[in-house]
Image 1 (cartoon, rainbow, N blue to C red):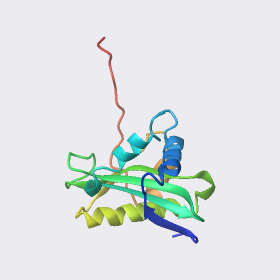
Image 2 (spheres, rainbow, N blue to C red):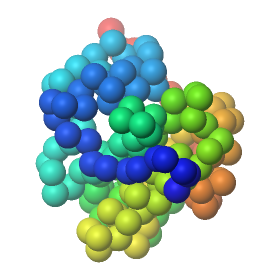
Image 3 (cartoon, rainbow, N blue to C red):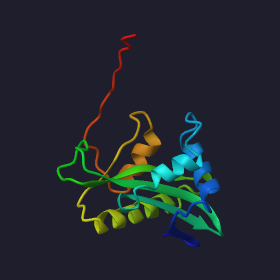
Image 4 (tube, rainbow, N blue to C red):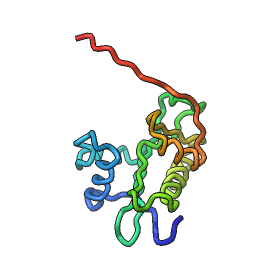
Length: 152
C-alpha cells in the first residue's frame, strides 16, 4: 500500500458524501449514483457486497465496490465469482498504488467468500481502465459490442 493510505470498509451515512462524490465522478452521466439510496443498494446485501474506501489524511481518495455473482460471468469458469463493480481513484492519487491496493482488498474479500475468481469489465474504448486492470493482474477474456433495436 502507498504510504499514508489505508483501506477500510465504507460506513453509511458517515461516508455518503465522499463515496457518493467519487461515484458521481466515475459515472457523471448518471445523476443518481451518489444518492444515499444508490449507496445503500451498492452495499447490500452485506454478505454478498463489499465497499472499500482508500483513505489518506482523513480524506477518501478512492473506492472499490464488489459483489458476489452467481449467474454466469463472461470469461469465468466457476460460480459464484467476485465481481469488481466499481473502481475509482481521485486523479491526484493515481499512479501511487491506491488502485492496486483497492483491488488487493477486493481480492482478499472475494477469497474470504470462497471464490477462486475475480472478474471485472471496462468499456471497450476506456484504455486507461483496461491498462489499470492489466497492471493489477487481470487478463482480458473477450470483447463485446452490445446492440439495441427499438420496437416502439
